[in-house]
Length: 115
Length: 118
Image (cartoon, rainbow over all chains, first blue to last red; front, side):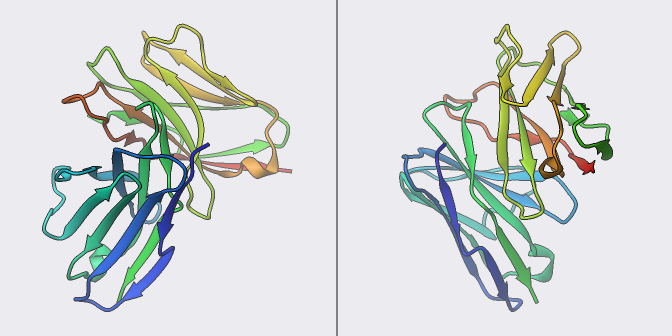
């Protein structure tokens, strides 16, 4: 199957700093990528849809100014958590669509801890 | 109303037994897709199986099969001959009809924590 990578896998930062998470499709081009967030012992919640070359679409309740998404190429989407606070501590996972919209390949996730 | 309902928060199953994980869904779309993912403690989401709403036959992938009951709006995952390595969280997810010609993200259920006992 297709491979999606995320970097970094873990990050610890101080409150008020910004953190950038990268999501890459390694062996295929992904026009669309998705960003999810998962709090401990909870399910995945879709945050936003990232489309190459256009603005991201955010789900209701997700602050677009806080979670900046850039999809500058067909293999890379980035999520920047701006002015992070402890309540932003979570597991962030991206996924990328393959040739068919029925295929969604997930990255390994990034665990963010904000002190 | 929840779009994906998984009613079993946790399950204990004896090794080598078959196990069924329940999933019901709610959508008014005619075209949709149903997914099952496995999430071990490492956190990665491992794709197991997919069923499209127009697929007439139940999907199968090795030891995994999906019992698709469209009229009941259920998509249960069946794991045959369970193994210790099957212990993990299992999530049912749905992709609803396309919007604006683009892909849609998945809506996930709350998951079932499956523990296989030796």
